[in-house]
Amino acid sequence: MSIIDSSLFYSFINCRKGQYFRNLSHTLDVTPFFWNSFEDIKEIYEHIIVQGGSGWTYPWNTNPISQQAGVHEVVEPFVTFEEAKNEIDRLLSENKHIFIYIRNRFVPHMVLTGSDLEGIHSITIISHNASEDIYRVWDYPFDKEYELNIIQEACNHSTIKEFSYITIDKSEYDRFQQNTENDFKQWMLNSDGNFHYYEHLRKVMSASCPAAKTLISFFGVVALSRKMLSQYIEKEEYSRIHFERLLRISNLAEIIKQKLVRLSVSENYNIEKILTNIEELQKMEHEFLEDFKRELVTGIETDYYSIKPTAPVHINVKHLTDTSVWLTWDNSRGEIEMLRYNIYVDNTFYGTCAADNIIIGNLSPDSIYIISIESVNKWNQSSAERASVQIKTTPLVEEGNLSCYKPVYASSVENDLFVVTNAVDQQGSTRWSSLHNDSEWIYVDLGRVKKFSSVLLNWESACAAEYKLQISNDREEWNDIYHNQNGKEGIIEINIEDASARYIKVLGIRRASVYGYSLWEISVF
Image 1 (tube, rainbow, N blue to C red):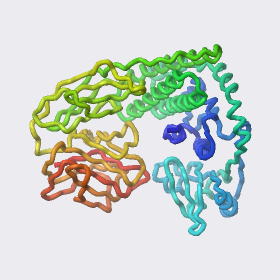
Image 2: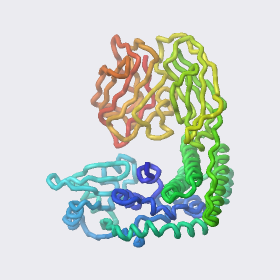
Image 3: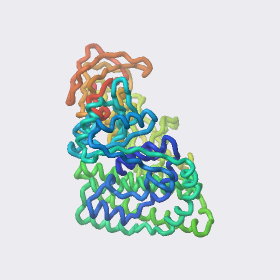
Image 4: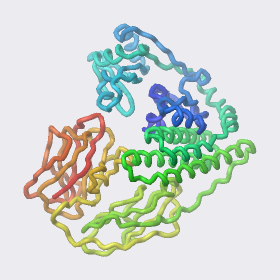
């Protein structure tokens, strides 16, 4: 997947710059623009930690508007949207995208996302339905249609009254692609990275930790910078080891960012683990730049080698039920090395996961099993040995919360914080959240066909306005047992007479917000 399609890209880069890049990506390979994306840690530190900036305000070196690349920005001022409308409509009819500033409180999706209502923001108008005077607007991750009056009000109340579009000289772009190599080499040779600023950051965090939001922006910019550079290095066919190292660096910065998100909602999170990760990040950055410069100077490609992964350690039985076991293990290396794990039940392959935990289902009550786990890297190399644990399921349970700690599956998850297992963990502070689509679902596996009389759904504010409850015994044929067309947040108790099934699904039909669906818990009694 291109970085242009990722949430990381739009979370830590100026909204207008991100929209320009996306527009260019429809007709050009934008990777050559990333030749100078290796941002100096001192610059990131000064802007975000010292000055209190963010990813959206960070002055990235990489720029989609480049005379050298033949990409030019045309800016047209206006007093009111009405006077600019004819020209905007004409350009849209020629398949040009229009970039325009709006005031947030007049645009529904900006209001629903809790944005500063008086803030000014850039959106992309990508088409116009002339017969109905409706404009299609793109603003990651939203693709919306708005009537003329909404666009008029939003633009007329903006403090920046101008619209812009992009023109491309393909011949200049082709020359730019061929000529970035020397600029890139000089850029990297002149960089020392200033990685010692990671030490400054660790000291600051140890003494008086800055706000989590500030730290999240810092590591978000680092992660995006290294991810963009990895794509440029891969395209230019430098030694594969540099590409892999940059991916690991970006991944570790993302891991730190996710840990900081958890820290922001939990006072008990261990900051020492984060400080250790930052120390490791500094070391990885130094090794990458030192080896990459050596290759640039000598012209000798760096030897590429891969080390077979080791089996996971510290396997822990988190929860046992009559038909399932929830296992966790130490994934500290797996996160950085981007490992996945093959799971075996009594030496029979069960499945694969990338996380540090799994709920294994389809077990028999009151039975002993040997669960084995092997690590697998990106090159499909497996650990020489498997880590194993012996478990015994509980006797058959036919009363109480039948869904507690059972395998659960979903059409999507929003991110690593709002994973699907949160919906069955009996923790009121954790939740599952889907991507921002109407047709999302989640279902729980009770392990075998069981009788039940009620289902409790604890909806977060991002609830379903309309949804169905469905049951199945084979996951192939689903039968409706409940239909709610006026869904609300909070705990909803659904009473069912004479019901029995193995699988129980919540099928989303229509969202109540611009977000996805979010459930704190699914309970079956």
